[in-house]
Image (cartoon, rainbow, N blue to C red; front, top):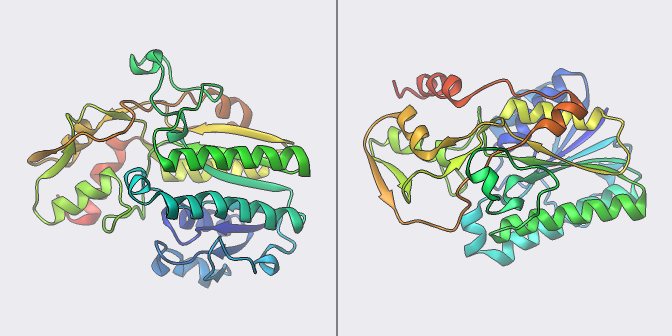
Length: 308
């Protein structure tokens, strides 16, 4: 395949680029390098990947979409709390940027588009999920609780629309709390494991928001990569949405225990109490399976960071 990966120098994107190169595909990366890192793609560039320092809001990207078989659209501003603080910027990138990528793909005849969505589109889950009886299903109501989640929902709706009126084939993958190699441990966009790792490296207590009982479905980055490639290689026509989650969840307190050390509390913030994926649809449709748990991965990562 001739693949274009937006956000290809980022955490998930660079892992996807490596896997595509390993499978022998041609890869073009578009990344504005605001959050992407050159070191994430150094090996991929040596192996034939091509990078363009461009923004997904740019108008002059047609030349990069020529003869592309599939677009993997991962580029986004992705922090829930920051989206509340900077809603206009996040909307410009996450809504206009996604529409711009769809339009470039449409006018250059790209038929397959894989959109990186988010479990945050569901918002506060129904009682059955809160009780741990069943995970979120793709047909559950979408009730976003932040600008970021709303923008991902709008992105999905644009994808659905482009399938309907332009005969494109689009898969939206709703990621659940992705972790793994190359996740950030610095800067504004790090998530809970990155925050804990940075604090441990600095000898600081781990900061836990609220009571720490909020539960998250943590999903390994290589499993997310597999879902992207399987979606790209599938023979679906039209629009499909899939949960990409492990189907198990852990509390923030559980993650803190895996890191070890003293903790301190921060004020509660607006966020769902629980995320948990029902991943039966992607298992059945694509044959996808999660492979790694946080209990398996965090001890290995701590050794790499010198935290043991």
